[in-house]
Image (tube, rainbow, N blue to C red; front, side):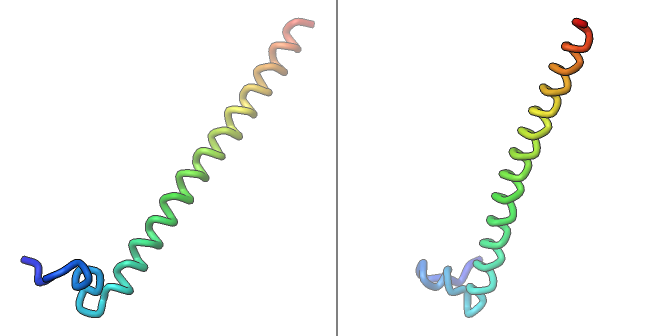
Length: 62
């Protein structure tokens, strides 16, 4: 069971709230960074594959 009587007690977490919420914040930042990093990497790979496909197509037409 929980022993929190109010929202402020929940946020404070008997003095451990700072560490808990900092850990959640660090996790959130890492997940958001990973999502944007993966999207950028995917876009770069797709652009490279499209460029290589165009180059291969132009060499076949010669």
